[in-house]
Amino acid sequence: MDRLTSQEQPNADAMTEWRQYLHAHAEVGHDLFETSAYVADRLEEMGLDVTRNVGGTGVVARIELGNPGKGPQLGLRADMDALPMQELTGLPHASKNPGAMHACGHDGHSAMLLGAADLIQRRIRSGQITGDGAITFIFQPAEEVGGDDSGAQRMIRDGLFDRFPMTEVYGLHNAPLDEAGVMYFRHGPLLCSSERVEITIHGKQSHGATLHLAKDATLAMASMIVSLNTLVTQDVPPLETGIFNIGEAHSGTTYNVISAEAKIDGCLRVYLPEVAETLRQRIREIVEFSAKTFGCTAEVQIGPGYPAVINDDRLLDYAIDSATRLFGADRVTTESSRITAGEDFSFYQQHAPGAFATIGNGDNGWKDGKHIGPCAVHSPYFDFNDAVLPTGASYWAALVEDRLKAGV
Ligand SMILES: [Zn+2]
Ligand SMILES: [Zn+2]
Image (tube, rainbow, N blue to C red):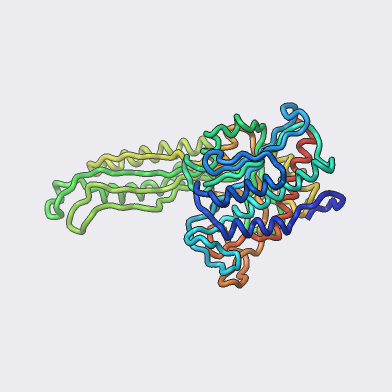
């Protein structure tokens, strides 16, 4: 909670209502028709200037103060999409849409940014937030889709940065295994890049009895899988991070015919672009030479995927200072762990410097309506912890106030 009690406070009851409504009406990917309409309606009720259908179902609201071009033009981003999975929390506000569930807390992210928009409006009216600049509230779909067709990319391709100029962008994700309401920051690389690696091997089919006439795609695939698993030990510098996993491998159609085609589907994750480039090159070499060894040929498709989220030092310092002013140093962690998952926030950072933080979400697991303790994201028992909503909204509002006060 905000320690500075003379200020306008976040509206916790409204945020809880919004969050639980969004949770109950979970939608997936780019098809967030009800979700985005609900978010846009709430923003319009607050009297904000709202643009719907940005990049599909994206919603943008903007506030300009004084001479906007003279000050920092801030982008605050929340994601709105749920996951294609069945909810098992048993809560009264559980998803009404079968096979769609807010298991990553994006309902909470949207509610916190809505609460922030409301709070910032009130603080501008009361004269607490002043200065030159602009605030763009970005509500994006399809953070979870992966690849180059994410919600951030579609909104950017629809002119997000031209239509709503931004000189710095900020993001926030809940961290369910960390203490509720504590803010977590880290300088430099925070979240990994994530690129899909699809390999197709072409061999020559033959009856199993005439194996000498075949070029065995299964054998090439097996050799490739073993060799690809040496990437991390042989090619990643010992103090850096690189992860390569194979999630799927398929070959052949029946037991007594030698397979002419095999497929391997995996994922590459790193923090540093130079490590990514080395690993991409090594994957291509391993695939080519493993295929050749068995008389086969092969193709590799790598990405395009999410780049890594690497925090801008200056903006992260602003974010840390605002959180510390607001909550005290004991509620702010400045050396949080790196996260090996990906986030499409990195696409915004290709257009403006950015800083991404996480907020502890504490005990949030529910099964058959009963509390079961902390629960990781993407679990069918996950429910965003509503006690955290005012913390997130206060953080956004303090950051805006401090940035506008400091100027460019
Ligand atoms: Zn997720
Ligand atoms: Zn998420």
